[in-house]
Amino acid sequence: MLPYGRHYLDEEDIASVVEVLRGDFITQGPKIAAFEKALACYCGARYAVAFNSGTSALHAAYFAAGLSQGDEFICPALTFCATANAGVFLGARPIFADSEEDTGNIDPEQIESLITPRTKLVVPMHYAGHPADLEKIWRVAQRYGLKIVEDACHALGAEYRGAKIGSCQYSDMTVFSFHPVKHITTGEGGAVLTNSAEYYEKLLMFRNHGLTKDPNKFRHEPDGPWCYEMQFLGWNYRMTDFQAALGLSQLKKLDRFLARRRAIVTEYNKFFARFFLFDLPIEKGDVRSAWHLYVVRLGKDLVPVKRKIFETLKGRGLGVQVHYIPVYWHPFYQDLGYEPGLCPRAEEFYRRALSLPLFPAMTESEVNQVKDTVAEVFTEVAA
Ligand SMILES: *Cc1c(COP(=O)(O)O)cnc(C)c1O
Image 1: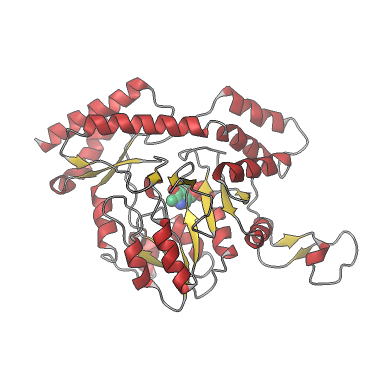
Image 2: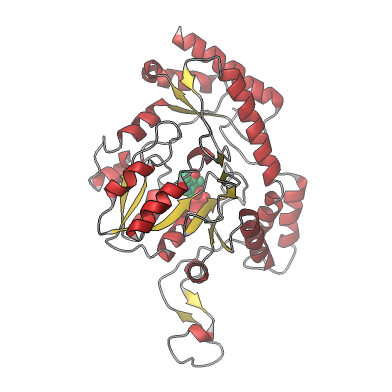
């Protein structure tokens, strides 16, 4: 089965991990700081803090932004559930925003109407790697004094108006994931990028139980030179040093990965352009997508047979997937009182969406297999 996404590892990656395993530090050693520095440098941000997952990185970013019990935050309905869950961890309530019909991104025009006196934070998620309209969102957020955290788990290497996503030009913090289906992998892992020293300090402490060893920050008179203080409730969200070594090695290949993804997308677009059974993904405005996913949108008359298309494609070896079930459709959120119908365009996008295999390690014959199988199956089902 050809999956919709998968990692690429070479001998250099493996050697970088083994080297750390043979050394003195297998967690919180020098590779963490080196990976953070390289990542911040790549994206054009001042600071990066590595975490043990994208989800824990989101949790930390929302915490550092000041989100807490009783607050509201605005996030898209069309996203992975972790975008919303990370705020629920802090006792906050997600307010789901609807999607743009073409990109699937949060609709910047709708955000203002969702703001209440409790709103603290807006979380754009760059769906499939296509940057959301950050400047528009930034302008609304500025007017109401809201913070912005980008969920950029799909968008490492993407660009918005000539700057890399992660530069935080129009946000307070940006979150990445290094799960194996994402652009680079550390097995499990994530990071928060920021230009603020204050957020940076908070993120470091949140990752390590809320502890500080800096005597200048102590609230109590220290008992002795062994002292450290726990100043707020943090977690153990640390990445290991061998994961950071893998991340560093993978980061060197990121531009090649991005170029390969783009080349496959160009090939798909060219081939599927003469198909009128689905809409192709687009790149809109002054952006460069990181092409995390290749999501086609079925024509309305094919929506009723999507299950059959999905099953037939799987039966013929294509590991297709659907991104995403609107978050508030999940039983957990229904139990909290969210009703179906809340975000009609996100629901319609979900009904039409189908993700085809796209990852840098795909061979030319696998790309052809996708093109031929999709053409074959859609022609059969539509007939
Ligand atoms: C992958 C992903 C996450 C979570 O990242 P993990 O590393 O799996 O915890 C969060 N949000 C989005 C949009 C993602 O795609």
